Amino acid sequence: MADVTDPKINEAYEDVRSDKSDTNWVLLDYESDRSDKLAVTQTGTGGLAELQEVLDPSKASYAYARVTYSNDKESQREKFILIIWIGPGCKVMRKAKISVHSADVKSILRVFSIEVAAREKDDLKEEPIVVRLRKAGGASYDGV
Image 1: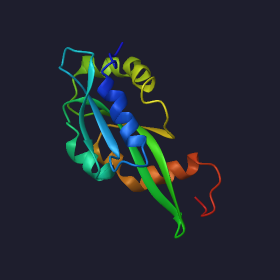
Image 2: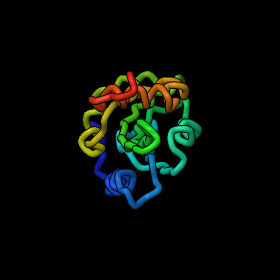
Image 3: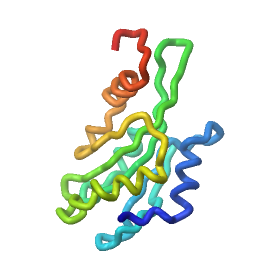
């Protein structure tokens, strides 16, 4: 089991969800290579592009992000995504625990439209994620 009891995790989650906050992502990392305790390591306001820059290729991490996109010039949507990052240099034993730990993370980062499994930073390019969000959103008037 992953330890997600740190109250700062829930605070950061609520901050990303808040309409009053500019924070649009939070990153959770393990405290150490041998620990199963997760902690907030960073938050940001620069969207998925900024998040890509801070992901460590040697780690497994979890991120929660708000993605804003337009369907037309008069409407904007905000959707939330859960990102499960397994960097290309992540240790084998950490990778093995991710599927079990993901359930614990989902118990605190509860509300999201899609889950994104990212192995390379390019997996977090905004355009393909927005396409997935549109498909998951139901009614689409732009042929996607």
